[in-house]
Length: 283
Image (cartoon, rainbow, N blue to C red; front, side, top):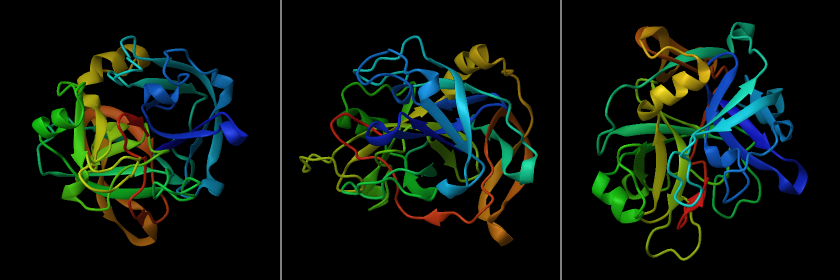
């Protein structure tokens, strides 16, 4: 995956992203826009980090251009999809960048998924994690997702329920980061979260909070139109969710829509990352 840094100093905002091709990265639209609006943040204020799981070792790239879905709604977070254009990435350098396939399967209640990010590891944390973190989550039913947030759209969004994996959640700084299935296929990107009804403050990983994720399968036409990537399946690679010696992941060739993410070349830490959920809190 990629780390997306927006702004600097006290104004720095952190997000994640998945690489669609050597020139394009998909992330959350709210990561690329002024809060509460559809106004794009200048690309010159956005820096992309790739190729490592420790932030100090990331290769940094300047964003060249950004765009968000034309029907993105900053009030409800519907269509929370954005694209960043960068200078060509080197997919062969030190085997740190590899392609991955987007999942074409339905997201089913109770099934396990993995979310990745450099976000905060607790709601009270002052700083994001210096390491890329992965956490296991389980899908909630559409009914549960809808009960948690009245603007939930089951056609384009899925949600994960904290109570099914206690302590595991995404938190602030994880927006735009990848959600993958147990076979390593890209399912979606982190969007926003809601608090448990018993929580009056943002509290990632607690109670019955819910994390909501853009279901990328539903945006294939949009992504293809904006990136030039084909809709038809092509030979590509999915990463198995099992680490091999040295922290590299085993890969298997398969047929799927060609998306790409940064290959994780060092050992991943397991912990709950990410964003504070809240009554509509973006990550």
